[in-house]
Image 1 (cartoon, rainbow, N blue to C red):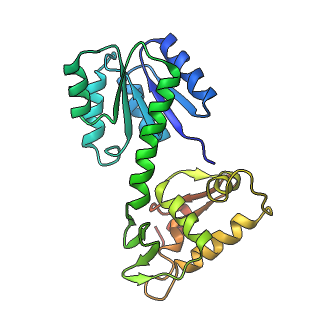
Image 2 (cartoon, rainbow, N blue to C red; image 1 turned 60 degrees about the vertical axis):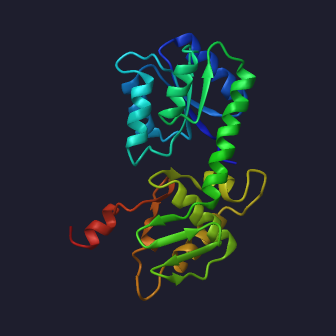
Length: 244
């Protein structure tokens, strides 16, 4: 399965390194930042699944960064756990009140931290599994297991449905065929080399019909030498085709 990426934001190198090692041993992919500015850049560029955020940071406090994330549509749903030495009840209430998903006080047990991370991620999975995903007029309704464009219900197979859900939940990222295979089929499933390509062709066909033409199939973009990307931004080839 796809590894969860966690951003650890702390100005103390020893804390960053200790948390990084603990989380990597637990199977997470870990990136780090030492201040608020670097953390904001990494959230935008790397799109982590969860942020461990210290309160006291150089160049702006963690609580100010939390407020900024919650105000921005791009980051408002980002999972954030405050990881801080501020241990008073007022601090905890403020952190949770500003939108933190959990609040962990230093010093902490690495095992307990991993458990708290899993708890937050489970809540996110439960929420996302029921949340309708929309891109333009393309709707994917997990509760009804239905995909539609402009109220036109698509005839889509189970694997193509999983592919589309994966892409719509991970817009603008480039994924290799192996990464897509692990996310959609599972890491221990053997597939022929071009199986992913075949199902993507089927998905593109399902997203194309007379009323919308190819406008939705073109959201699934081939990135030469890298894999595939789901994006609303036109590729260079489509720009040239349209005379732009």
